[in-house]
Image (cartoon, rainbow, N blue to C red; front, top):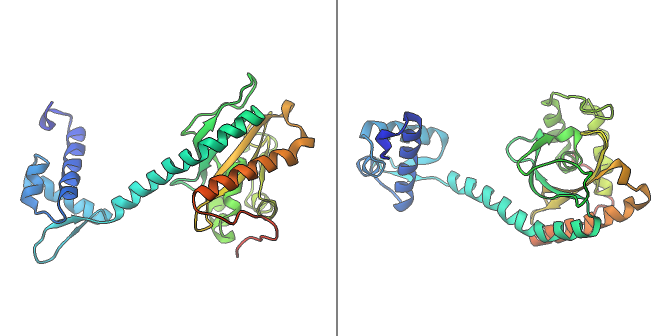
Length: 269
């Protein structure tokens, strides 16, 4: 079906991508060529291009008035690629953790909304009784071990800013429901290198989480191990943490980080 025969919104999207593809094929290109490439009128192509300029995806040379792509699209692609590389690197370690513990293993990031953690990879528990989750699911940072992990490696002012924008909801009787309650846990999380969800997101489920760093030492993801409380053995907590840290260290090394230690760290002010 031709673009002109599709619903208006679909046709518009096709024209936008036609323009983007035309821009990608040549370093600089004029309005007439772009309108032909997108199979649309000059006036329509012009409107789309002006919007793209406002959003920062397209620039225009003053003298020739030709258009070119900016690096903003590269940034978007790099962000997506980073997640693909991260999950690929993490998969081996997550599989090992799954085989050693038989419990649910998750990898999460903050993505575009720092108030929510998003699961980008997982290994399900090998038991029938287990945490229910799916890739792409989002949960609040304040009630999850992974969320608290990534808050702990933000600058203190930034973490507080994120939490102050949150609408705290008590998911269970154990949920932390204030900025100060969550902020109060962050120094210890940063010191030990592990965060814990003590039935704060879901009754009957406990989670442990550690950070994953990039080559700049930024915590870009969190790795977690989840248990039903009936299988959580407090005597094995140190062993669980050790396994998580070993996995987190190897994933971080794959991203170029070679300093994975937690002693004597304090929150940045």
